[in-house]
Image: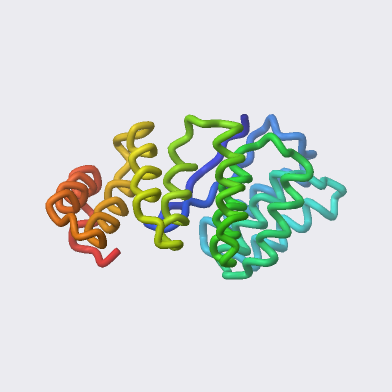
Length: 203
């Protein structure tokens, strides 16, 4: 499995694929790929897109490039273009489960909720043990007002990775909406215990 990196807020997690020497890229394409990575980290998304497109111009139609292009379009709010990029990536590598997480995220943003859940479920089918899937699925279920199912998704994420603060925080928000204030407080406190920096932030 290729190495990937999370860019985390308390919303969806986008999974970018990082350059590794083992990737099937020649020197010039590899340089452009690394350039795209670095520009993403600096928030220079338009320039990053140009770098990734240079990789494609060098006849490297690789799922890793389309994945990162899709994530950039997500950050720019260009959801249709993001979906197009993820679909290209899936066509090139249909067994790489993080692609379905990202696709689920963009489908949710487009209001295609049933298709989003299908994408998350495909990711689970390919790898049922990644907490990222359930965390992202929980957010999408929240957006649909399916709070009980969202709680189950967050609980599954927590079961798989109990040191990740975000599912506790979002779980607290759902419990608060359901009027379960004591349980919500416990969830918030656990999130703060794991990440004290969120205590005084309006997330």
